[in-house]
Amino acid sequence: MDSAAVKRIQTMLPHLDEKQKRLFLAAEVESMGRGGLRDIHELTGVSKTTIIRGKRELSEGSSIGGRIRNVGGGRNPITEKYSNIEEKIEEILSEETAANARDKLSHVGSLRSK
Image (cartoon, rainbow, N blue to C red; front, side, top):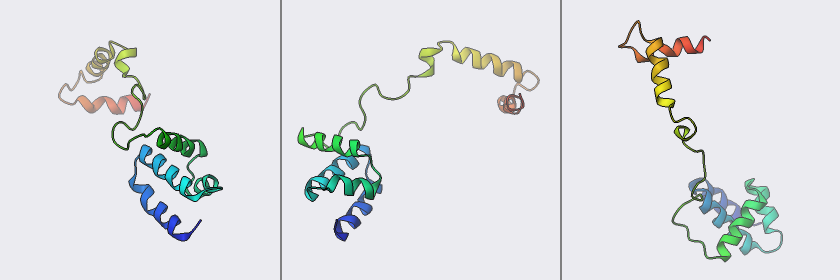
């Protein structure tokens, strides 16, 4: 791998989001030919499967804009699992702050000591 490619990659990567990185590195691999995947992986530490995914996205015509991750990814809101969570928190806070209702943060110290 030539030094210009190394400098270009090291300069660009910190400024790209996940999808942009995949597509950029996949394009670099394509331009390098044989051994490019290994070289890019060793230089960047990005997994080979991530780079291969980028190659697939490029061949399918994936655009840079739009969502970075698929819809539905990430953690579900806690209110879905515990519908009454807000009531329980208020109950705990009211018990802990009964002596000083103006200081809603006074509960923090008592919870940490348990």
